[in-house]
Length: 249
Image (cartoon, rainbow, N blue to C red; front, side, top):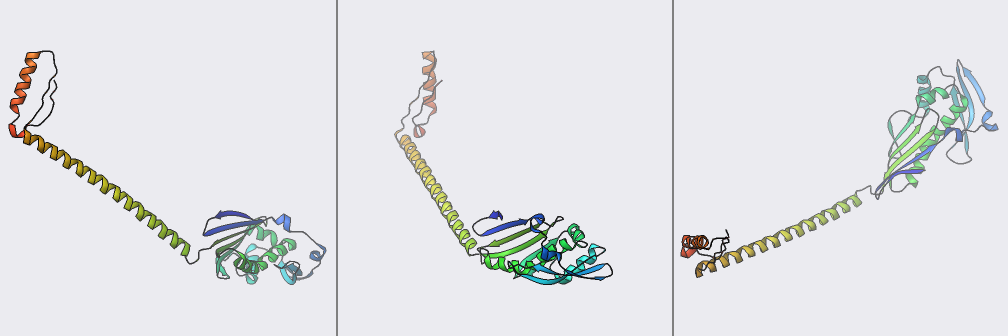
């Protein structure tokens, strides 16, 4: 069996069986009682069951002229075959058989026997799956391809009532709230620092205005013009608004 998908609350398993490895003719399988009605032959055979070593006597029919009639015969015995999703043990279940394989079986007693053995075993197998698998099964699928190879897939959950999912969601929501609170705290602290810095700048500016002090400077290569520039600049500063700053030219 190969696990194709698994996590902490759900899973999917997949199993494939090869027709060539499972169909082996034995002496008991060769012996059967046949009756014929037109082209259709009814054979009384011993079919294997889902229980190891246990067989049952069953009548199977072959010799159909078309797949449609053969399918109707099989669906009369195995109503779940090729009828979409049905329910087994309360689990949605699909049983699909390739029309190409049905065509091979309808005139081949050996293949027909193999097919009916497996179709008949499916309900017991579904019960075993439901009782034996982890958690709660949510889906069952049985597929028989054109060569008679069987694939079985199951899906399930160990959190049928959503308790684990709810706890995970609540934990995630709590983590998000804590993260948002930290972001808000950082923003508030940054805003407080900015307001404090702005207040300090305003206080310093007010102190400068009260004293009327100022500092001017200029850079150049002509002392006379530089001095005149400083004088003109100092005059342009009104006494109440004078503050300390540098002017470079």
